[in-house]
Length: 265
Figure 1: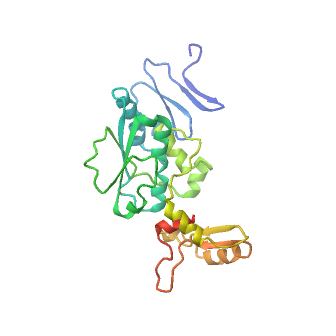
Figure 2 (figure 1 turned 60 degrees about the vertical axis):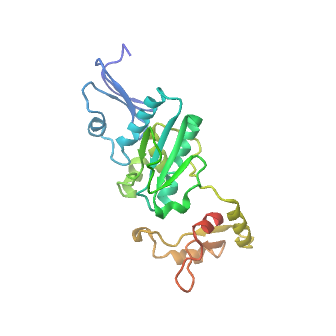
Figure 3 (figure 1 turned 30 degrees about the horizontal axis):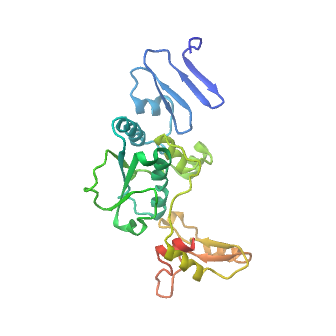
């Protein structure tokens, strides 16, 4: 570093910010670019303002949680972590968060004990993540964590088009794991299937020689629902066997409950 002057350097892996001051701190932004803060800089405000980091998924709380994790780990053999998703009531968002305990367990193994706090709307999805040690519905007061990781505020802050322009095809899970300082080769969400559900799927799977496609016709948010979905399904049925995951009966009730949907998928 002695022969390198203060400044910004473009490297194959990203930009290198070099500061010749007496105190430096290094971070990676959400694009995996190395950032070195100058002495006196306010950490996260400087990251956003000086280096033009987008607010898309930028969450100082996630970075703080990982820093705090190492502080506790230096003092204790086992760290008790509580992950809060009790304000998340969308199934897709719930399933997305499943990679967080997966990442912690893959990296730290038995050195971390994980509790997950959920709400009533998602309680039927409890016990479907083998990486979570304890589940709590609405109240986790009986659990005494060393660190609380609040995932309730993880959300898209931009429209999809602008997000694609900024990050390309980088997955949502990758962005959050980057901020936690954790890495997974396999970022597939975790949704364990119970034995009885396997039997349901075996009995109800379609007898077809065609590839089977599951289609969700509508989203909980109307703006994410395409009005031409049935036209698309009819076209698909010309070559494939299609299961409508949110199919309704004559009385307007869903044909499959959550357990049955998971088994079919």
